[in-house]
Image: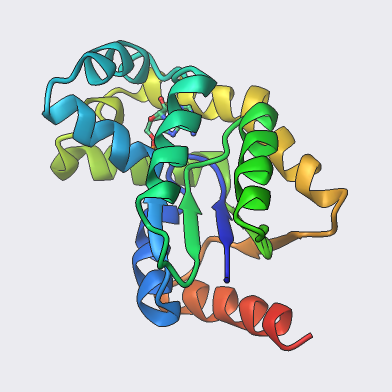
Length: 193
Ligand code: ADP
C-alpha cells in the first residue's frame, strides 16, 4: 500500500494537489474537511455539532474525526493506498492513525508538507471564499484564527512524524503544475529508495 499525508496550513493547496495525486497514484482520497462538510449538508447531529466549531475556526474533537477516518478505512478494504488530506491535525490524531494503519499491517510512507507564507494563505482563502460557499473562508478574522489553531495544535504533527524521518517539506508557492511535479519527485524517491 502507498499511504501519504498531505500536510500544511489552511489554504496551502492540499485539496488541489490531492485531486492530482489520487489520479496519478490510484489512491483513495480521505479529507476530513470534505467528510465534515458532507455531514453538515446532510444536517446530521455530528454535522450540526461540527459546524459551530468550524465556523469559529476551531478544530472539531479528535474522537469525531478519528471515528470518521476509522469508518472510511473499513469501508475501503481494496484500496491501493490512502491520501490523507486535513488529517491528522493533532498529535493524538496522528497516534490514532498509526494504530489504525498498523491493524491493516501498513503505515504512512511519507508526509508531504506544503509551505506557504501567512499573507499568501489569507489571500488565497479570501479569494476561495468568493466562490466556495464555505462560511469559514469569508471572514479574515476567522481565517487568521484557523491559522493560529494550525500553529498551536497541528504544526506539532510534523514534529511527530519527523522522529520517524517521514517528513518532506515542499514549497507550496508557484504554479499548480510546479508544485505537483515537486510532490511527485519526492514520492518517486520514497518508492524507489
Ligand atoms: P482548510 O485546511 O482549508 O481549513 P479543511 O476542509 O481541511 O480546510 O477543514 C475545514 C475545517 O474542518 C477546519 O478548520 C476544522 O474546523 C475542521 N477539520 C477538518 N479536519 C479536521 C481534523 N482532522 N481535526 C479537527 N478538525 C478538523
